[in-house]
Image (tube, rainbow over all chains, first blue to last red; front, side, top):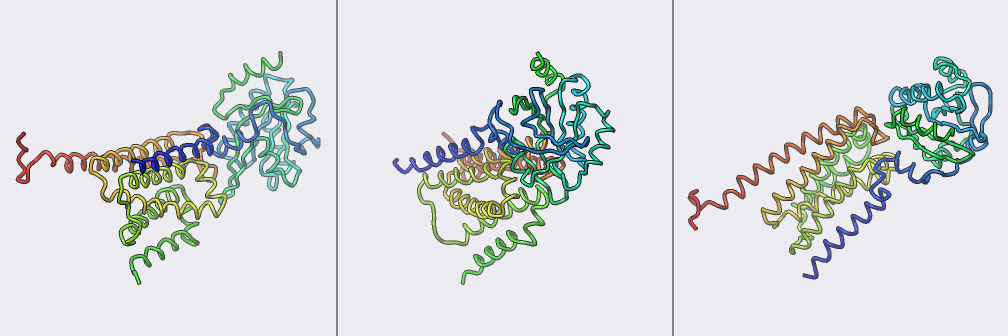
Length: 193
Length: 191
């Protein structure tokens, strides 16, 4: 009878391990794990230096009291980025006080000129910047913010598609890719008030 | 020298190192179906030809089945698939744990009552079906090291195999366990 303690203990040990491994059965993908490692909002934005299409050099932490909506893209992206950019476009039109920043996760290929062309093609809003990170260890820095970037063998890049709302150097909310624009708008209206 | 064991070792090494491993890792189906079930199969053969470490007690068999199930669940989680692509040591751990899983499955199933075999077969195939369904239907990327198409193909294949295994288990239960109610000559046993 005592022997049955072995399978019972194993079951308990495996379940406990899986609970720890998936951050309490909530993070089953690398995207959600890295996001949960960054902390729950509000959490501080790591130091991240960006050079943008208009020649500006930006440190997200010092963007002021104006809310900043950040997404991560790359110009050759054919999957999630166009949808993410379309969301940014719709939000940029409606919220002029919001600073939109699209950060390239492929700074080796995405030149400032190409980023400017994309910015222009997407309406050329004054409150929308297309930037690329300049720090050598930018992958580590964006990871601390909750962004997972993986360059596949075929050259495509799988990365976090969440939108990050930042204010005064802190991420105050993250919006998952499946979040509708109408729901984000409600949240942004509350932030503006 | 034990020839079957040597062949198992050679096959395991050949399918765990380049050029075969990167080739199989190139798609989710290659990695998480072909390679996985190949290594489980090798583990089953290892159990058959290696005449040591037999499970004689019921609790040992239960522990073996729990560990096998844990290994399958663990390596079905998208983070694990990603980590095994990012870190080579995780990939090798994946291969070894699937071989070990097959071995444990062989040791645990041997001597297990048919009722438990049937129940475990249903549980395992249901697990495959639900895993396949999740991977097939999710429209967001789960594994960052593969594409969405890869993910959906993997889901379809696992769903298909899970379905076949489920039907096979049900038929096995009907014919194997159903015969228990019959006498040796095929007539129903009288009370």
